[in-house]
Structures are given as C-alpha cells and as structure tokens.
Amino acid sequence: MIYIQSMNTTPMQVTLLTIAEPNRFNIIELLKQGPHSVSEIVQALNIGQPQVSRHLRILSEAGLVRSRTKAQQRIYSLEAKPFQELDEWFDSFSILWEERLDNFEDYMLDYKRKEKP
Figure 1 (cartoon, one colour):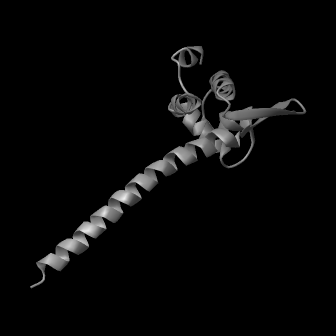
Figure 2 (spheres, helix red, strand yellow; figure 1 turned 90 degrees about the horizontal axis):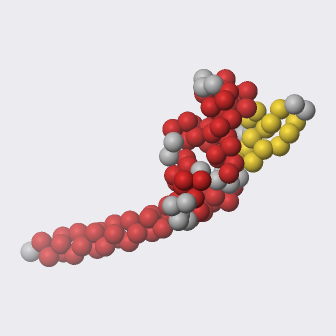
Figure 3 (cartoon, one colour; figure 1 turned 120 degrees about the vertical axis):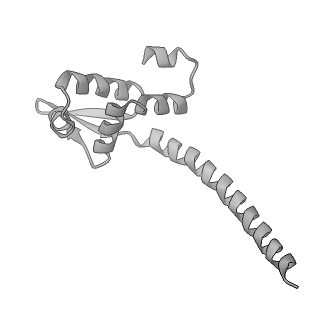
C-alpha cells in the first residue's frame, strides 16, 4: 500500500490498483452480498486466515472496506464512496460510446438514403 501511495496516484488509481489483485477482487465480490466476518471470508474463498487478514487490511487502508466489532469477531463491509466514484468514471465511457454509436447510426442512415435510387 505504501508503494502504491508513493507513486503519486489519485484515489481512483489506488482503488483500481488495490482491487486488481485477484484475492482482493474476490473479497470485494463476496462483500457485495453483504457484511462478512473474517472466518466467513476464509471459508468462502478457501484461502488462509493470515492472507485474508492482510488483504482486508490493504482494502481498509485504501478506504474500500470498513470493519466493526461484534463480540469477538470483526465484520467487514464495503464502503460505498469509492465504488460510486468508479461508477461515475465508468459512466463517462458509456457516454463516449453512446455518442460514437449515435454518430455511426447517423452515418448509416445517411448512407442508406444515398444508396436508394
């Protein structure tokens, strides 16, 4: 995490770099279903508890997950804000493609009109 932050990265880049690791991506996918304890994550993903704890620490440092204590368990859930920012960023691409497809449709309609005798 320190290495990523030392690269002069934006929060969006930190989010993308953090979830690019397959185990962290799988943890995010699992937490989309709802809050889970560390032991539930270990069982669901079939990876060791130390690895899950390390990945959860990294996800937490990146602001992607939060934890709360329930008895002797730590329960993890997703933080909404980073994913809302990603959603907005991805939406900018859909706007770009909608414009391109609209232009292509206009071109094809114009082409068909010119093709008719």
